[in-house]
Length: 308
Ligand SMILES: Nc1nc2c(ncn2[C@@H]2O[C@H](COP(=O)(O)OP(=O)(O)OP(=O)(O)O)[C@@H](O)[C@H]2O)c(=O)[nH]1
Ligand SMILES: [Mg+2]
Image (cartoon, rainbow, N blue to C red):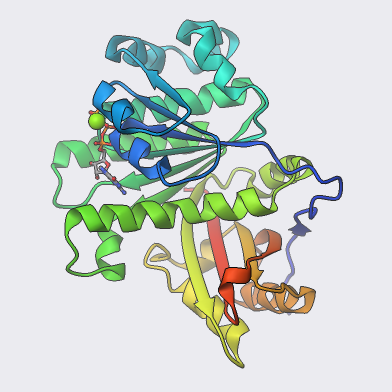
């Protein structure tokens, strides 16, 4: 018998109140990543060139010394004295239930900025989800090692950190030039953001945090399918994501979002049952929403989490 772990559903906006979300783009890559999104967004960098290019409604230029100082400040001190970074920075989290912090790890602004801002978000009671691209193998060893070190730190401090290895992009889009590959990656990284913005209400923030628990390391997969066996096919396609390159039975928690032009409870149920057989014992929180642009296709987004 398969042991069925906890399953929760997003509350479908019972009181019409979706969660107040905000995107934070940190560093050059992060500023690029949030650019196409049509949600409230903030661009943060030590480089004014990044901010000049950005259409974000708030743009914060951080001096490198101030950022390095905040990064080296003990986490508990930073939490108790957020004024170290300045009130204008702390105010960014006002009226925000869910913050998405997006960056490429390996440089200074995005790596240190994400670490500092995830601590600040927590000190303001905002649930934060980090979406981080990690460097190509072809980038310098120093850069890759630094990215790895910050990723390890983020796993300790953030609610969840979803890693998108740039290397795996070549599986999805072989032989495309780097600038195209980056923009493809950036649109994939926005997908879980869009899904959560479409489904999470204020009431879902605590259950979402509970389901994630200590399983702070996330990976992402996306499936699309149409036709008779679309449930099995959408599950298989999502699970064959190049970022699910580990033993999936290690998965401890999953955020599961299904969309179709006319979402159907029974179809959601079949997807969850199929996932149960691939991910035994996985805690799940699931939601669905209508996306008329899908026509006769269905889409499945999976963030699968474990502790490392
Ligand atoms: N997915 C994606 N990754 C990118 C992009 N630009 C850079 N990267 C990756 O992100 C890593 C960090 O690069 P940047 O964002 O330029 O670094 P930064 O945070 O601005 O750091 P400093 O310039 O040193 O302050 C790089 O090593 C690349 O692997 C992008 O547009 N999309
Ligand atoms: Mg930069």
